[in-house]
Length: 302
Image 1 (cartoon, one colour):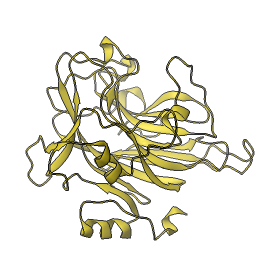
Image 2 (cartoon, helix red, strand yellow; image 1 turned 180 degrees about the horizontal axis):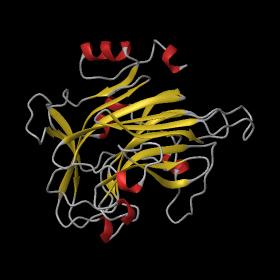
Image 3 (tube, one colour; image 1 turned 30 degrees about the vertical axis):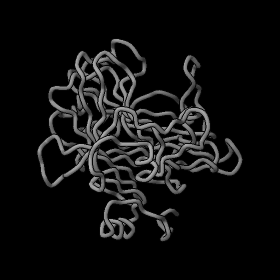
């Protein structure tokens, strides 16, 4: 298993944290405190996340509209954080790259998120997650209807929906896991602290604005054999935690149909879109902040 690999390299801003990370199973640890501040460059993404530029169509490695600033909450202990600018009247934008990970069948991934109180939420704000393959393989080209498959790629990333996007979910900031797997594409599992398994509408978690929130995602690939569609089971895992509290608990996932597909990357995406247009445009220029990206073979926040 991945936990047996004692030689995985760790990218971190301090030697002490690197030692602790390696001992705890962590394969990625980025807190931005080694950056002096200012524009976050493509080379920074390569240095920090081993950003991949070679997986073919569907991946770019840009860090558009991204910089490093002091913690907006004013906590001196947090230090530097990543800031993404979302310009008034524009969809999309933001960083887009894949941070490469040692190939494995199970990972925990965590990051801290800060959405200022003054932000206007749009219909869909895409946030980081985990992936195998390229973004194009895990989703679809523009104008092409996506179809599920369990061989080339899978994707699950966090998405924030504004209140009323799904009316049954009520008037809350709707935090979800957005999924492409072997059975379905472009579907959600909502964060729900009352019932993380069945996620009833009335228990939908509302993401607070104006404070840091720690989000953790766990993916374990389902059982599958070397021949596509032979011996694959619906026993994969998708779990999520918010500030250490379980919010999604699905242990019937069907990520793949063959055992050659694993997990090999962190998707760093932060943009307004899907679709582009007025529903995903704010009337003011505003920001989303990130900190403490960690990927580990073991639990991180709980």
